[in-house]
Length: 148
Image (cartoon, rainbow, N blue to C red; front, top):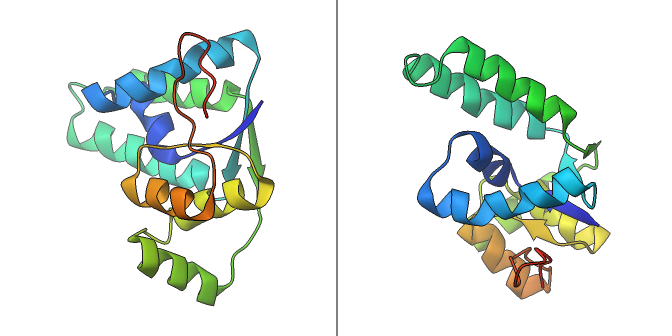
């Protein structure tokens, strides 16, 4: 199964919040079983790493350098396919403005839309855009972990 993985869902694995853990933790068994490959836009690694490094810098006692290094190693081992599919300025701006997305969020939504695969995200704007464009939002369904 292929799923677009939004940065927030990946970050949830390493900087858990109650909401994030409740959503994103259910992707881990699919990774462990080899039943999933994630598709991400070209900036995914930069976006996720920037967030993790910022967390380490702001709270080094809670997120020490060994935590950061281990986290980055785990991310490198994930089944992730990075795609460099671009979006023109006009579409990027229109989708961002219409659905209250950041320009960083639009490529995740656009990948799921064009590839016709589900997207794993907790971002309300992406979820709203996905509903409008009939893009599947990965959600836990029962114990098998497959989305709708």
